[in-house]
Image (cartoon, rainbow, N blue to C red; front, side, top):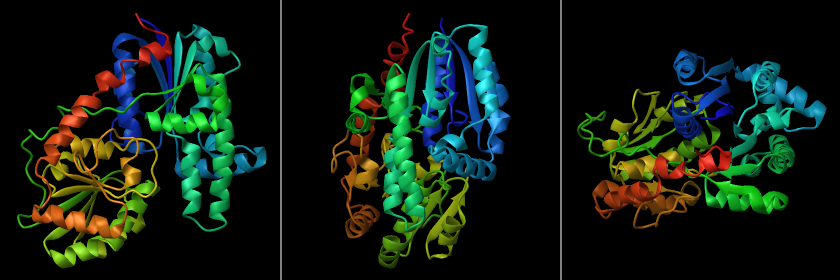
Length: 402
C-alpha cells in the first residue's frame, strides 16, 4: 500500500461531469488499494455536501470553495501582471500550497497524481518528497483556447490567443518536470508530442471508461417524455461554453427543419446550470430545457436519437460513450467523435454539417437508421472502454505496482 498525493482542479465527486467522471474513477480505484491524500477545489457549493464522503474514502482531504467571480478577477490581475496563463491564477490558492507542504512534510509520498494542467503549479521545491509525479492533462487545454479564439471577435480573441500561448508554455514546462504525462486518448497524446517534442518520450494516454452496468439498456426506466413525443436528446453541463455553442447551433440551424417535418419532434437539452442563452432556447417551438435532473439515463434510454453536435472539442466525449453504452443511435459531429475508437456508419453516425445532420436526425425519427447500430455501439464500447482496462496501466505509470 502506497501513499499518494492526489490534486484535482475540481472535486471528483459526484461524477456528474466529464472531467469528474474520469477523476472519480481514478480516485476510487487508487483509494481501494492505497492511502490517498486529496486536495481539490469546489466550484459548485452544492458539492460541499459530498466532502464527508470523500474524507471517509481518503486519509486527508482539503476541499477549497472556488467562487467564479473572485477567481476570474484574481486570474486577470495576477495573469496580466505576471505574464503567465490566466488559468493558473484562477486555480491559485496559498492554502492549497500550504496543505501540500504539510502533507509531504509529514512523510514522503510514493507518488503524486495531478489532474488538469493548473494543478502543476503545486509542484513544490521539495520535489523529491512528492515521489513519482504523473500529470494527467486529460486534454490539450491550450489547443482548446486556440479553438475558442477562432470563434470569437477581438478583443476576446486576443485574450484567448494569449491564453493558448501562455498555457502551452506552462504545459511544456510541467511535462518536462514530471515523470509521466497522460492524456485522454492517443490522438491527444500525439498532438501534445508535436507541441512538446522535448518530452515526447514520456507522454502517454489513459482512455476514459464507462460503467456498463450503470449505463445499460437493460434498466426499465419510466419515460420522462409525453406519449407522442419523439425526443432528440443532448446531455451535458450547460454552463460549459462548448456545450452552449453546440445546443445553440443545433436548435437554430438544424432543429427548425426537423420540427417542421415532424411536429412531434422535441429537442431536449438535459443538464445542470443552463446559461441565459440556453434557457432562451426554450422559447423556440419544440425545444425543452430541463436544467439539472436526478438521472440522465431515462432521457437517453427513451430518446429517438442522442445528438452530440459539438463544434469545439478536445479529447473523448463521455456523453458519446454513454449513449453508445445504452445502445442508442448516436449522431455526432467529427469534433465530438474525435478520439473515439469506433467506425462511423457502423457504431455511430458522424455528420459534418447542418444539412447532413438534419437528414440523419429525420431518418432516425422515421426509423430509417439501421436498427443494429445501437447494439454494435454498446458492443464496441464494452470491448474497448471498460474502466478496468483503462486503469490497468495507471499504477505502473505511478510506480506503485504491488
